[in-house]
Amino acid sequence: MNTAERLNGIGEYYFSKNLREIEELNRSGKNIISLGIGSPDQAPHPEVIRTLHEESSKPGSHAYQSYKGSPVLRRAMADWYRQWYGVELNPDLEILPLAGSKEGIMHICMTYINPGDLVLIPNPGYPTYQSAAKLAGATLGSYELKEENNWLPDFSALKELIQTKRQGQEFVLMFVNYPQMPTGQLPTLKLFEQLIAFAKENQVLLVHDNPYSFILNEEPMSILQTEGLTDQVIELNSLSKSHNMAGWRIGMLMAKPGHIENILRFKSNMDSGMFLPVQLAAAKALSLPGSWYTGVNEVYRRRKKIVEDLLQGLGCHFSKSQAGLFVWARVPEGISDGYALSDLLLYKANVFVTPGGIFGTAGNQYIRVSLCASEEKIQESFDRIKQAGFIKSKHHV
Ligand SMILES: Cc1ncc(COP(=O)(O)O)c(C=O)c1O
Image (cartoon, rainbow, N blue to C red):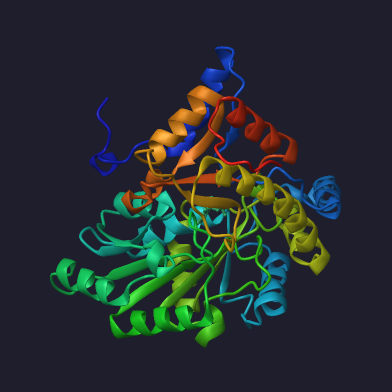
């Protein structure tokens, strides 16, 4: 049967296909180690699991929940923003719990985009920005981030892009994400100030997607640290990476009350709230002390060391100051692009790393290696790749 036109140009999500392909290779007798997806393999805090357990044993826990999320969770989200980002938010009016930041990206597009409106998308960047914008009928404006510019936006190029693509009074929405995925680039307050100024000057609605600020980063930042909430900015955040709760599907959207009301008009027609015990366990997670984040990051730091040795051995070029769950690295001379290197490692060493081109054309010369595998698995990947003859330097782990 023909699909709706809105699906034209929309494929299945890359990792949805990719995980199936790896499963097929494994069924045919291979034993692939995947350093692909950024799904934390460590467990949530035991207190979080205990809360889920206890709350789900209570008879009153099983009904439909509020479309705006439990007040307990919204308060915990506001407290978390105050404690870690120094940002004051009204939990009743300015926070909307979500089933993950990914969901929020779609809701924002469906709430604000008319066919032909312009959506600015980072290249390289999280593929969902592009597909959500396309599904909403937007015209896409891809803005390139370059290594020589520390993966920061070039504001004069952005202005030109808007001028070229905006024909009349079309609405413009811009997705931005720092710490940036896939490049690992950290934000600065100056960058956030520049983005806010740019959004005001050009009447752009800025959506800052912020799920990585607690991973391998000493100083979590929010774009709301600049001027707080204004009509021009929405921030998304998530417990997926910071609290090892990717499968639980808990995110949040921070915006002025008018935006929250508008987005709720769409969202409340899409879902019927989240399971209360999940929300209360998430509130518990948000109240964890600093030692939680330190513990999570110690594990990632050890893994990252082996990944860096592996990349060095392959002759890849990368920055050591990356934040987030990945290491982003340029392929060595002599290998045509990230797809070629990814194929080589998959078929000759049974190790999967993500080709950078799936995040946009500006990622073609790169690969992205996930830190969401045990040290043993990462070490084994190193050994397999070495055995296959790809480790050139003397580096050893
Ligand atoms: C940049 C970025 N935004 C959002 C998400 C989705 O996060 P969530 O699990 O909260 O939907 C991801 C997940 O990989 C991501 O990399």
